[in-house]
Image (cartoon, rainbow, N blue to C red):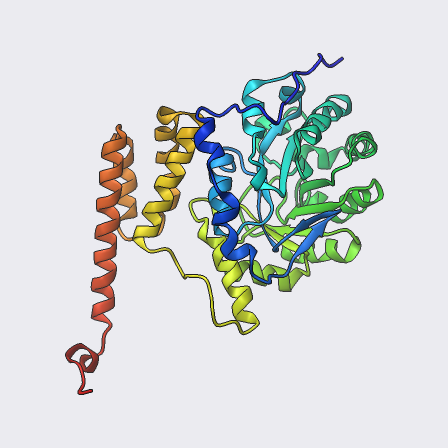
Amino acid sequence: MVATPQIADPSKRYVVDPDQIDAIDLSGESAWWEDLSLISTRIGPVEIPNRYFLAPMCDVTNLPYRVIARTQGASLLATEMLSSVALAMGGHRTFHMMEFLPDEKPIMVQISGTDPDIMRTASLMIQDYGASILNLNCGCPVKKVIKGGSGSALLRDKEVLRKILRTLRPVLEIPLTVKMRAGWDAKSVNAVDIAKMCEDEGVDSVMLHGRTRKQMYEGKANWDLIGEVVQAVSIPVIGNGDIFTGADAHRMLEHTGCEAVMLARGAIGNPWIFRECIALELEKRGEKNLPPGPPTPEERLEIIWKHFELFAAYAGRDRALVRIRKQLMAYVRGLPGSSAFRARLSSLSSEENLRSSLAEFLIENRRASQVTDETHITPQRAVGRPG
């Protein structure tokens, strides 16, 4: 039996600084891309204004990062994975993880679990809270998740998964989706079979990462398999896996025929990847007025500290300082001198030191880039030519 759950009240704020969070003008900051004529899609009755989705990721897709991603062009946002048990039992931390702004819609809330009755309770709470879409996690490969039979372990127990779907579908008015992997291992790749079952049970969309559970994040995602699933079902198939650039996103769309793409690791510390996806779509159809290219050091610094301030309002400044250090490793990845800078992060214990060190690093990075650019100028351009 499930204990009587605490109601997740949409009007209640679990964040540390509700006033700052509520003051976010997300629709205004996203207007630059929402006003464009991009290829849209839908899941059930939910209209989604472009084909570039943010994947659910633990410790990443919390409210602060979702806000950043939306301003850069992510259309469908997703929460972190929520435990159906914790939510059904009224866990305060889980409510906090579920919290989203009205302007974040369309937003997908993801849950994990194996008990159909508990998952029904949690799903109805999510629906009542105002989520646009519910997502069932059948893809997480992490040991602590699969040892209880949830996540990608559900791919090995088709009847349990079927029972969950048959319990949830009749009580939900919002779209029901499934995020899954190719299968448990190379000998049991069953994505096509699972996708067909999902369609038969009334699922509105499947979201497929083209790796098996055993692969974790090694090797390559099987994009051909995503294409096979597209051909096997009539519901929208969302592709996921090995999308690290805007070009990757468009290659997956073309290679697989999937309805949309879901960006995960490629978006960590790189919210600009959504802007890159949009720019390439516009460029492909001959548009001249394109979004900006890669972020300048100044823009990178601005976004990092916007992320910090959002997280401070969300969870408090002390927690924000710890979390932003982890995010910084992703934000500066690939920049000249980033390895040395990351090595110093653990010693930067105050917000002031972190801010000044990051600013110095990005200024030096800009100078290094300018020197590199100057060394590639031809002699004629360097000395100038008569007008």
